[in-house]
Length: 575
Ligand SMILES: [Zn+2]
Image (cartoon, rainbow, N blue to C red):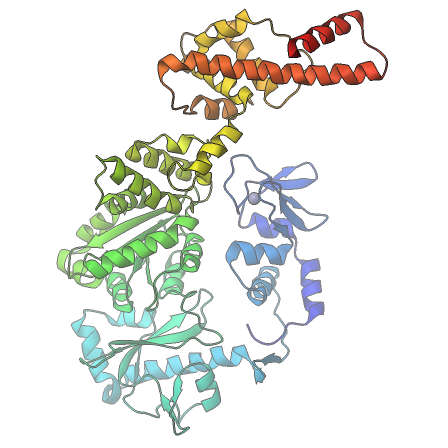
């Protein structure tokens, strides 16, 4: 990420790369005619509507509208910024990105110089750790914590000498300032930010050092210190240990998210190499999206105390929008006063792994958390529960998981409110005036007729008694109504379940399933009246439609004898 990349290079890159090969390396593509298809990586879908065109070097999703060229794909799919996408793309083609100097915040700024200075600083810190006159306290500390030289090496641990100018006297001060390694005094002078600390270099996922964390070796405060945000370091984007984890296993089965540097190191020491830590901030959605690129399961490890519970709840909230189908989040609350570091020492590897496998799934955790102070035996408790829980579930991307969360919400709240609209996401809170209105709008006579017929096939008798002539009519829903009536005539179902089964796999299955679950809030003995009323309205509507058509046809000069009779009948009925 350094310097402006020449425009001609980008053009050239887009000529050299084949978008089909590129996307196929992330999302296996299948040839379909002149293009290539896959299930869309940007939204949840059952049948592939994501298409990649070799001639155009474009991709497009007919489902969610995502689309673009190879660069946009990398930016979207890998959560890269523009320059990172160019770099990755160049890497994919096997060429280097040429650089021009770039104006950065009014100064000549070269990102690669920042990466380079941090790399030099890291080497210097490692040397200091090994130098016994300097790093002895840090080595003792590592030994006390049970960390071996191997782990120290894997994570390039170092020691920042207890001096104000260890870096300032050695390296370019302006680069040190820009990379966050120096602080500036009021007097204008500079000083080393990390002093007398064990230091942890923080690498981005592409193995570039972007900042440092540092821990004191005594009881002074602050215990931990991080690099400030800089042009190349953003805490909301980076995770400690991710690069080191991916080095060992590029597709881990799961990734543990722990609270601190020492947790990552202690677990690594015990052979658990799949943990990462946020850098003194809460985990963000960006963190989670990043991690879900490499695994389908995340396990949050939190201290069981009040602060840990709070952090867990915050993490769960961040996780909801990331929970596409196939992704899983689990919550592992540790015994009070323990962190992964202390616990793995206390209980050993097997017990700790057992805890990981037994961690609570997000759905259980979520419902338990929301319900914990509510009395679901009361209407008040259940309605409060519904109102509190629903906004979270609405953040889950469309898919099976979301549906199941809604189903559970419905069951726990013992409410059919969620069915009223057939579309839970549209419901605001509990039943209100507007939802009743909305319900009336949504519940057109034809829908009521179809829904009640599906739910109570015996009502077909009432349809039979009417002399219905709907031939040639195509108002919305008429096809489904005709199909339902035909099916009932054909199979004479004993109950709704049998009727429903006969729609499995048919194009109308979805509509039928939605309507068959529609809740009318009416008692059994009111069903017939409701149905007759809706049927009458529907017949009126149908007649209205036929009347209009016949009147138009008459003006244009031609009604058959039959049509004339029909028109006459309709007009008299209106009077
Ligand atoms: Zn899509």
